[in-house]
Length: 320
Image (cartoon, rainbow, N blue to C red):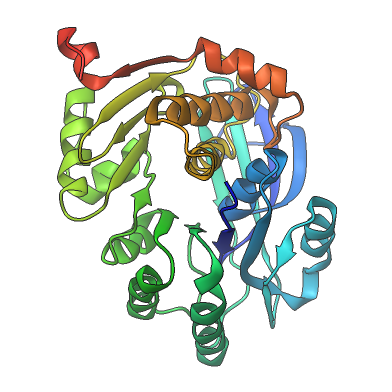
């Protein structure tokens, strides 16, 4: 195995996570608090991989004023810390899951990255990232980082690292796609935004993912919430569906899936085993309300319950 993995989160957050039966807009809502975490999409991916015994290096930006929670996490999880401190505070996000599994997020603003901060990071990172086999870039960009500068940095990463995994949304996702990362993981809403139309059927989603894959992105994984996920490559199309789970919190489910995909790559697993693992990790995260693996036997049990088929098998009964 011996693959070196780095995960970059430019815009981390302290996540205040809660649960309620239903959000009543314009009124007082009583929530069950399920956690307050030093988090961010890339941090969640790092946690999953560390629970699976992969050594992880984390990097990005942190606000100087409230850095302690993150630095405590890095020490506790034994992450190698390459984060750069900038003036200001790391943001706070509020994430509320409803009984119907809907996730509503309130993402507050945080620090601003100066041009000098960005130049220092981008120049340094292109040197130290050369020693890594797999690089994951997750989450949004903080204020101050120009999309054009981010795209150029992403393009240069292809010269440093053979496997770049990218998971973001909105304008950051569009900017990163110009660099043709090795794997992306939009949800189906994000995929609809990318292709500019509604995708009401599985066939529509697969066709659209395939169109993006043909533009130079080797792997497109589309998360479908409780309906599972689809993975499209140049030669394969897989569809995975988890069992019905009691939803505690949907926060981090997509990140857990990304972690599973990276772990499969680290371990040289088959496509089928990798996707089954990734889907199981996502389902466990939803059902337990935290990004963690407390019991490997429980993970094995969940993997056995994942319904996984090549896409053609689902449609025509044929095998690939």
